[in-house]
Image 1 (cartoon, rainbow, N blue to C red):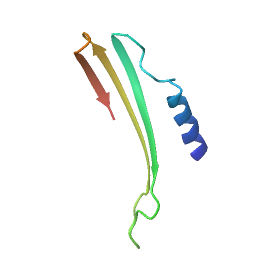
Image 2 (cartoon, rainbow, N blue to C red):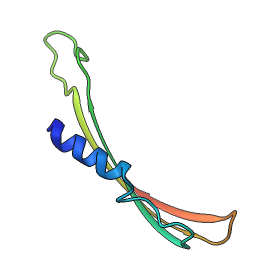
Image 3 (cartoon, rainbow, N blue to C red):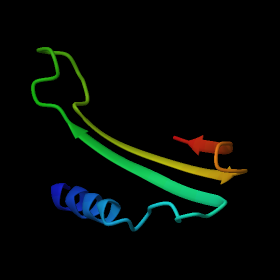
Image 4 (cartoon, rainbow, N blue to C red):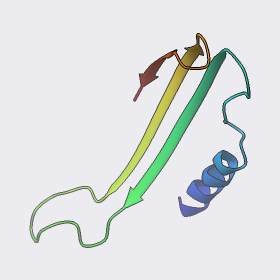
Amino acid sequence: MKKIALLVSMALASGALSNLAQAETYIGGKLGYSDFNDACYLNEPCDDESFAVSGHIGYNFNKYVAAESRRW
């Protein structure tokens, strides 16, 4: 799982899913993974690992005004 998270992080950092420069319409996405150690109390069930995905699409009307929709 750590190898997959590393590969996904590298792909995102390299700009594979980055917004198009100077485009009126844009799309993007986010991925996240967390792993907390010692986050649970004794004898209580809990999930100390989590994975998150988010996406968004938007439109730039001009240099100052834009509309965006997100899904997470």
